[in-house]
Amino acid sequence: MSMIEKMSITGIRSFGPDDRQVIEFFRPLTLILGPNGCGKTTLIECLRYVTTGDMPPNSDRGGSFVHDPKFAGEQEVKAQVKLQFKDVLGKKVVVTRSLMVTQSVKKLTLKKI
Image (tube, rainbow, N blue to C red; front, side, top):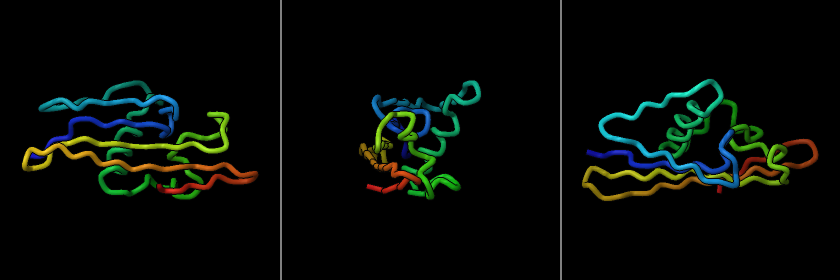
């Protein structure tokens, strides 16, 4: 049986670009609890993005999925989601997806790396 072990998030929405956050998933169940705005939905959207490559609705244009460069005080922000899991044969697999948002004078440009 396959099983998700860990996910690390850097530079996605409220997860800043400078420090990596690692979330460990426990057996047989992991509960995601917290107040509004703490990142519960972001965790679920990161799981979806890293496994399927599908961005959350309305985030392809303008890069609202990635941490805003204005808040970071930068011209560009790099983001990354990594997922570590065991496949059905018990081997560890790591999937990585990286993004970059660049701020120009009038708009944000999202680039999948």
